[in-house]
Length: 70
Image (cartoon, rainbow, N blue to C red; front, top):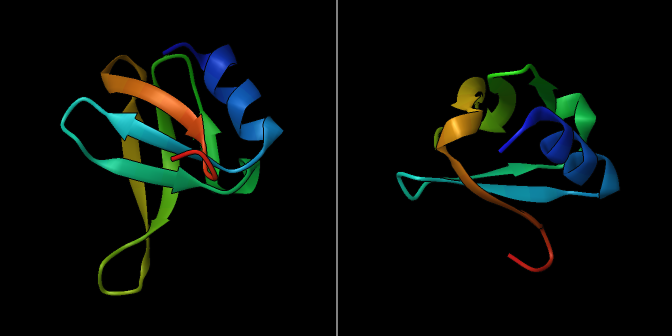
């Protein structure tokens, strides 16, 4: 995944990012992600209900899909 592809997808609407380890992260809009050339810092709600940052490496992203399609 490259920076421009991810940013474009997030701007078009809520997305789900699938990682190569099988994990999935929902990104509702650009307020929940900061994307650099090598990674995305994403704010996600953890299992305990608290908001936490996750650093997602762009090279480990398998796909990014619209939230409704995922």
